[in-house]
Amino acid sequence: MALLAEKYKKEIAPALKDELDIGNPMAVPKLSKVVISMGLGRAIQEKKLLESASRDLGLIAGQKPVICRAKKSVSNFKLRKGYDIGCMVTLRGRRMYEFVERFVNVAVPRTRDFRGLSTTSFDGRGNYTVGIADQTIFPEVDVDRVDFVQGMNITFVTTAEKDTDARALLGKLGMPFRRKDSEDN
Image (cartoon, rainbow, N blue to C red; front, side):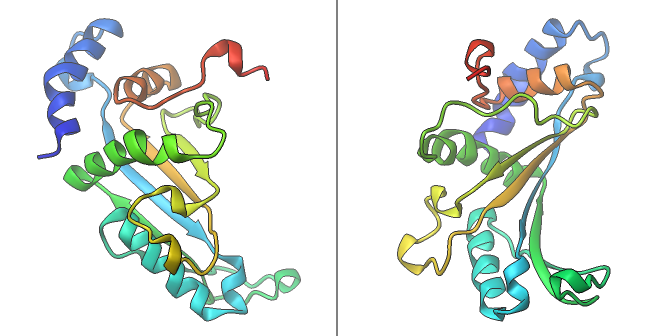
């Protein structure tokens, strides 16, 4: 079992129960899944971009990504229904906790000019999404084999019903949020 999963059970969940004043231990918010996705609009013209991005995402996540296809045709983007336009991975359980640990402790600090993650990216239902501009912040990706720099979206899905509860959970898991005074800049 991942170290972060054990830490959640032994330290974080009891602390959240007290902090959020929750009576039932089963109602304590927890991380249910992490979804990592890459949108590749340029893959319409160059098919090998999708293969390269899929390879990188597989290295980052530790499992094979699913190829996403266009649901509708859009003539302005020269897009037809059924074209391959992205890839995604859903992580749960042990892999999810391992990824969160690597993301917080290794990848995010390697981001250029990092000042903390925004606290405004919660969706109102307790889920948090962060956009990463460069996949090379993850040490699994070999910089010499990268064909092109590609961004990704990472969504942390929690069981929390309110954003404040989700922020408390992610903060305890080690997510480096910006402090209030530095958000104005």
